[in-house]
Length: 180
Image (cartoon, rainbow, N blue to C red; front, side):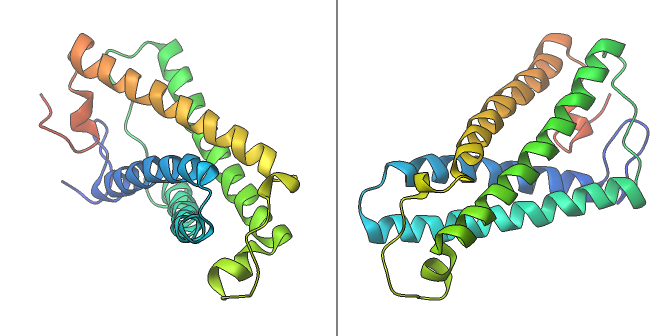
């Protein structure tokens, strides 16, 4: 596999960023919803430390991915089985992913800063974790988390449709399996 993408396959850098980000987003969604329901303060603080750290990592990966596409690489052409409408929907879906991820990072950082939880979680400042629902960024963060989960399900569903119904070996484009 090449570092950069070809006309029909993503390169190693894009594939690595994709799969690392995908795994981290799944972990982030699970940890975020889990943290919301935790009542034990120590367990919640521990999980939020991991959650916030992963959120920052995803922000960095997303910015790196955007920079990679803007300055270093070109995306492959759409799969031959993809209609122009599907191609536009796929492009819009990816753009929405970026917007939601960047919005989630901004609202998460906003909650940490406004609530003082960042100091409690990462600088051992004294005090209990705040009620995050008291801070405005919590609303878009919660909506964004649900939107991100729904978009992820749609994205995976579309990939599975391509791979198993259209049988166009779309997974090979992102590093799983061999191309035709």
